[in-house]
Image (tube, rainbow, N blue to C red; front, side):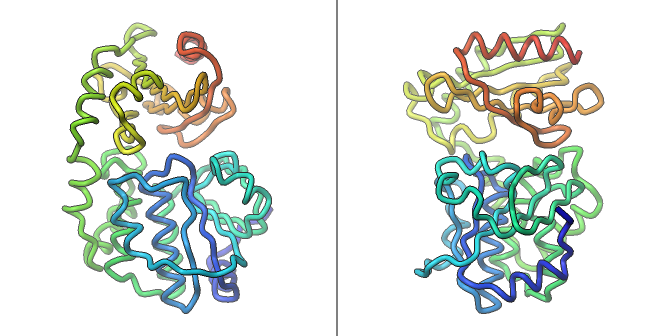
Length: 315
């Protein structure tokens, strides 16, 4: 499938109406920022749009409040920041094979869409939408800027990750000039924790396991722990940064048990030692060179053992 140009994307969006915008399961700032920014942009050019999620974590609810609720019969389906239809979670049955347009920044994109625009060089999906909106002469309002800035900042770790480019910083500056509330968004995304999350992190830090001569660190959030502490998606967001932050660790792995015996794996790595996307591809997943994920079925000990064996191979 050939890459759709911005001109083709603009023509497509202007010629259609009644958009449903799909985000991936366990939504983060980039997929939600992309979804709500696109909905606002479509509203601006006279289109109806709504964002389809598997739930919006509490710290991202300010984004959903920016888009007015609209009742209509869907005609057009667009996915944003979705690398594979399997990542639609509970929405896969309703939308698999029905996606008209896919906009993404993951190099290994497996979405079956009628049109696709995938830019793996973009630090975030919101960067692509920012450039598309500029191309289409859509006004970057303060609300759109808030959405896009959320995606840009979260997917770059508040501009700390290696995917941050000069273009990323120029876009962020432009979004702040357009009215993005950067200090408030950064505080909400990176500097504010619930007491439940602090309790969760206390327990997680106490159970870190190392392998490969200390170059790999693994943490886990099994269902038993989640239920005992009463934590949800909001508290579990951001755990993946913990093991990679440890001195000497070049690959950090986070296991989150989604259902009994089903683990969502998040990998963060130093790409000079381990390509996270290639590592996760071995388990049917994918992502970026320094941040990727996959799903593995088994007991906690079995999954850890499989991951340690894979780490030993690459290191």
